[in-house]
Amino acid sequence: MENRDLHYFPFYILVPGRAGSLQLDLLAQELTMFVLQPLKRRILYVATFEVIAIVMSTILLMFLSGGDAQGSLPVAVLVSLIAVTWNYTYNLMFESWEAKRHTSGRTLMVRIMHAFGFEFGLFVIIIPIYMVWYSVGFWMAFQMEAVLLLFFLVYTFVFTYLFDMLFELPQNVAAQS
Image (cartoon, rainbow, N blue to C red; front, side):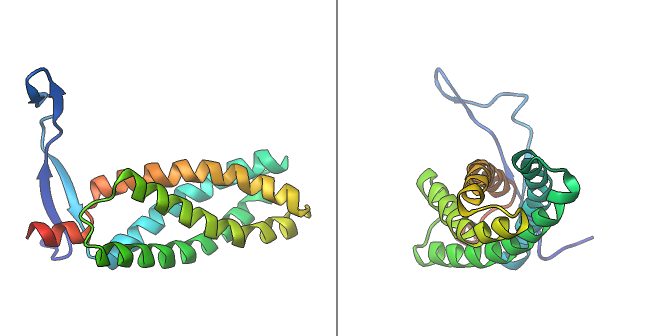
């Protein structure tokens, strides 16, 4: 079955050794990297990210609020729906910015900037939701979101890094062609 939207690119993992780079036999097996059209890449990114985020948010909110899953799952889903909209919009703007700069990859600084920008925008939107849902003041909602923000800064960085390893950035494919 042929899919015109999906391309396969082989890559190898190289491990530094004494004399330059050695390719370990165990790691030398060809891995597959997928390339999706930009819209499909964004949809897959958001859907995968948010499913994991709902589960993790529910657990964290249960711990932070002292409640159960019934009290935390609905707010986790609501926040996820908001985050999906924000995630799509933010990544569309971010990738547009990258394309204008003719970026061929994401450096550590770019990944940090991406994570902080996304989380700050979400932080501003979510505090009022926690205040209303959990009937808490600004300071408690701020603390709850601060804990989640710290978790999601790490999660966003790691998830995006792994996602980019599996699904090549569209502008990198164009540069290789």
